[in-house]
Amino acid sequence: QVQLVESGGGLVQTGGSMRLACTDSGHTLSVYNMGWFRQAPGREREYVAAISRSGLSTNYADSVKDRFTISRDKTTMYLQMNSLSPEDTAIYYCAASTGGWSRSSNYDFWGQGTQVTVSS
Image (cartoon, rainbow, N blue to C red; front, side, top):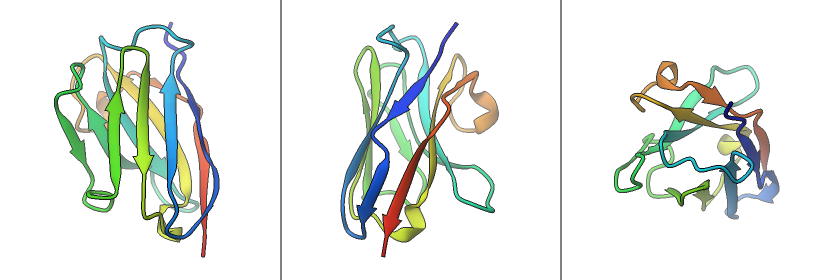
């Protein structure tokens, strides 16, 4: 059973940077397409970024393109977030998919989330 755990969230000032990580207790994640999603208070969960099993293909939501970078190794997925703004404040979730990667319905396993708060 896959149990994803996010880490690295916290409080940062506008313009700052933060790196999130997602792991399954050190087990390999290389068989899964992986993604990051986020949910702000009062809003629906939204897609942030995804990365293929090989790590060679990535995709980003327009709202984070050129500011966020998704990456992975065999056991951990990362989300490097730069130029953060209060609009990025949300709970960030990592997810793993045995199939596609473009929609939240593709994902089979989800973490519990980590809070990211960007102060103005």
